[in-house]
Image (cartoon, rainbow, N blue to C red; front, side):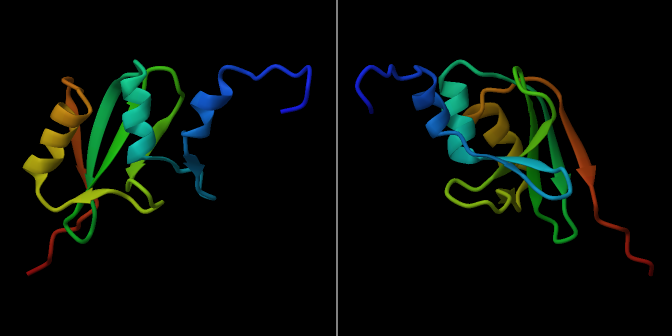
Length: 114
């Protein structure tokens, strides 16, 4: 740091955040960054589980001080964090993220025509 310059106290807070915006407008947050955000007093105000065509559930959250909805990505990766077990996905939202509100469930799977 150059002499005479003061460090912005929020620089350190921002350095650990990874907010990703995909070309289609989809926004994601890494699990590590979400945990850090929650540890610093942030809060989830809405949660949604989306079942993909493969039967895995991805987690989407709305945060108290950020506009829009964020897909939760893996800890060190920009791919979605998915759960094969619906109970485990709900338990993670409740126990790990501390969110106790309603959780919406949505599916992208199409019924098979038999």
